[in-house]
Image 1 (tube, one colour):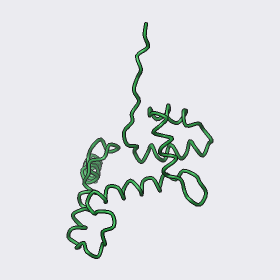
Image 2 (cartoon, helix red, strand yellow):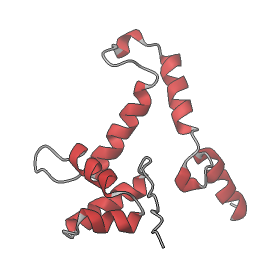
Image 3 (spheres, one colour):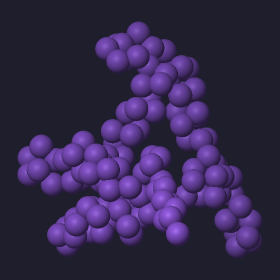
Image 4 (cartoon, one colour):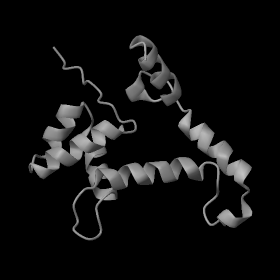
Length: 125
């Protein structure tokens, strides 16, 4: 009987997945092992490791990866090369609100605001 290939997730990595990659690489575990643990294709892990190395020591840095991810989100609103002096405070606040109110996968696709207040509502705080 022919084997059916199960496709692994090729989408964006979450913050938790990035820090998991960092922890597992620090234990000298293979890319294949990390990919299997995260249910990702090994090419996703390999690309992540290659793109987000600390220039000083060559190690993968999950914090750097998250920072670059946020820069990409900001670049959706502010073109590369644009001077921040040309952008007014209202526009920056609008970007800030959009980014802070994006639904997050790790919060069950709630916004941080919704998650925060639903957590406190459950705990009667």
